[in-house]
Amino acid sequence: MSVQIPRGTQDILPGKVEYWQFVEQKAREICRAFNYKEIRTPMFEHTELFQRGVGETTDIVQKEMYTFKDRGDRSLTLRPEGTAAVGRSYVTHKMFGNPNQPTKLFYIGPMFRYERPQAGRFRQFVQFGVEALGVNDPAIDAEVLALLMNFYQSLGLKKLKLVVNSLGDTESRQAHRQALIDHFSPRIGEFCSDCQNRLHKNPLRILDCKKDRDHELMNTAPSILEYLNDYSKEYFESVQQYLTDLDIEYVVDPTLVRGLDYYNHTAFELMSEADGFGAITTLCGGGRYNGLIQEIGGPETPGIGFALSIERLLSALEAENIELPVEKGIDCYVVTLGDAAKAKSVALVNKLRKAGFVAEKDYQDKKVKGQFKSADRLEAKYVVVLGDDELAKGVANVKDMALGEQEEVKLEELVAYLENKA
Image (cartoon, rainbow, N blue to C red; front, side):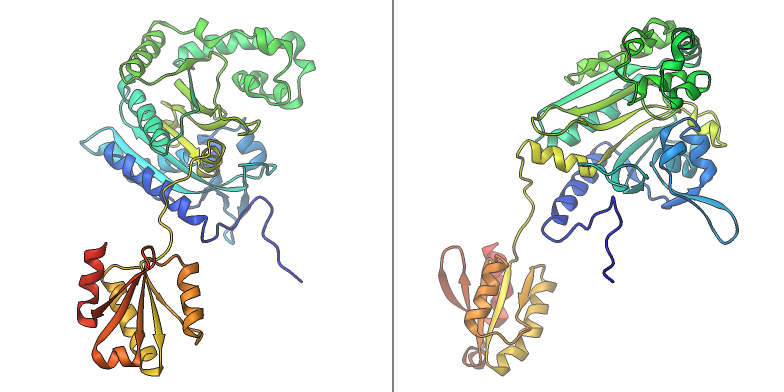
């Protein structure tokens, strides 16, 4: 019996994983510049965290979570997203008590959702996300968006579209909520069962329905922007002004809603407009969530963040024909001729590695010609040729593979020689 990889997952092999490493390193560099610190949370949490934090009416909670009972009959769930887990950690470790606020965090790690696999979408996927907790200031909203745009643009992406909206505060949302109920109620029987269930629980989620998105009532639904109170209007106007000050291009879309229940005020999505990217153009989403921390047992704490899929980011790079400058090949390959030279090569390769060089040697007793072929396949910059005669003289022949030039070098000076060449 051949054991197959689970549906909706992937193996990331050498040759591809280097691109992942490059992107993840770039994310860490950007976060460092913005003073966001890395946090690592468990891959599974108590199911209640996501039910309360993400929202009972969301597709994630209702349809997509990997939930199981452990041997103590406790219900646990593989994390489907990162914000709720970060919020739980924020409460657990009383980060709200830190004198320096906001608390600025980022994470990179696997998430799990049971959904239909398609291009760029998997059941296990990797998210990079940031969270800024503890302040209610439109400037921090703009900072989070600046971090997001800096990250994508630093990788060379250009065909991007940032869409923003305001979901308003509690008062604004309640007014909009009633308007949506009044709008959809007369014809709710024409909508899917999910929308019917959401009508009184969370009517805003109807606007995010994929099945009924072409229904005529969707286009005429009341806009949240019509129900923003003065505070919410001023907040959103300040966010937009900061984005303008930062030279960040954006479009206001009053129909934009996020798929999680905890969002309010600023909401946003970043989309790819590259040809051939696919039907699902969203690269990243996020927004403000001022009620989440209280919902999971913490004090009243404002917050804002975003999360993006590394898989979809790599697809966007491919769609724009962007080749990341990942390091390929090795620094040095040691070719040996003779038993004494072969024995000596073990210590020599280790010495090169300790000096910081990516070095390799033959372990299959290949002939010299075969060893040179291996060096070519590994894209070695230099080949160090060591035979028993060279070993007796305490030297090695070093060949520059790009130039085709060869030079005799004393073994004790080999590291210094290669360092000077670097």
